[in-house]
Length: 275
Image 1 (cartoon, rainbow, N blue to C red):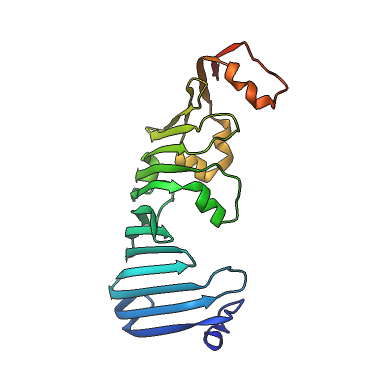
Image 2: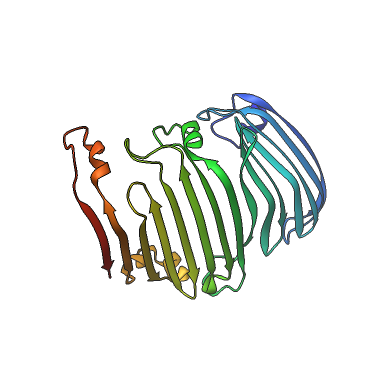
């Protein structure tokens, strides 16, 4: 690869091979192309990357449209696969799968209009992602982040609609198999976020024995178009929040003090609202 990429890429790969087959004809302006391009990159080593990169893709061009079927990418234990359709108005990605050590982590698809996020654009955006039982501690450890309690994350994310009327939702559940703090039971955390009719709302619950379940609710008006145009405007929106904890025994928390406090003969209850 080095002699081929020298005029275009910095820094240069130190190892790897590339197979390229291209047959196409057309014009650059206006864009019009008919043909096929097939690319295979094997074990490409780039300075600064801890693992070699391999990729394969085949693109079929027909006029102003192009289909990529499929696109695969592998970096060490991480891999991704998808199909894509690219046109003058939008790009659509289907069958997206992200894996780690051949374990399926995330799947889904998206449709992204090139005009988005231009204010006033009626081009719709669509995003659907699902994750089943992500082993967060193992994944973060593979990225060099240690000390995260073991547990699994299940999550779904959806976005749909044009910029001016975007709707979305996020649902996630984290079930820990190890405690955040020594002496406590593993926690279960759920979150729900909704975006609809210009309003963002969210709820979260934390079930952490021996305490009762803590719940948090927040809401604020939100215009995605305004935030994209002026990111700081989200800090100017009126926020309402409520935090609730039913009456809970504190006696069993004495172990968190390392023996300094032998007993905590007390109970706690919390119900607070912030506007």
